Length: 315
Image 1 (spheres, one colour):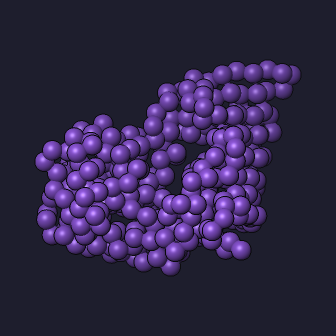
Image 2 (image 1 turned 180 degrees about the horizontal axis):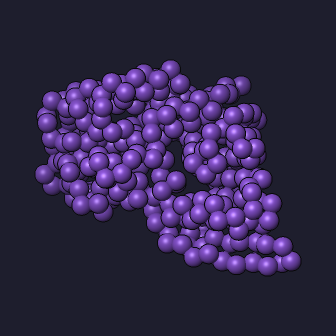
């Protein structure tokens, strides 16, 4: 299948590699700057790729069957709706949009198009996350009680990037980073019924939060604490699930291992393949397009996720 990339920033490289891993070809690049496209093509050995400076030009070029939207969130609505209207399948980087209202416009376009549309929440496709779900379903640690997820680290340069501009990003670390956390919680435990948060802003000259704590509750009563931060001197990326009979911990710095803690100081390690998330989500997306599987990450997941992650305003 021929794929177009919309937005040639850093995340686009990961998607390009995943497209290639799945034996597809990137045939089109689209960015507001032709120079950015050409530089991306040259650095990544895209010799015969077509270059466009607008989504309308890309669609008119009839050069691909699907696109991945890697542009900043404020530009997702235009790209998604135009691509869908022109019969293209769409994968869209998180968050779905910069505002819930924009996300709902995309949702309407998806329903009208009949095309496959998938928000790109790559973490849910990691082999370790699927194994965590299997562990919970097996009953090894009992019924889940608490879920803790931390994604934080030193990213002080965010103050100089579009990620810290609310008009473009829609918010700060909660919408950028905790969007993955919210998706993980919903993927593992189901819909979130209640949520609340605390945020803070330390970076000067920004209008978004750079540290946040989001508390959530599932319909089955699982309680979750989701932490994110760009201003943490030491990084941490971890999932910690406590059940009625034990505990399961996944540390992203040890990607091939899940640690199980049981009563009486019993422990065991469960081996998993590391994966990238990107390769696996693209495999799923392509299988859904081919009709080989039902899409497991839908427009509803993107809309619900954004509703929760944008429920606060930085002050």
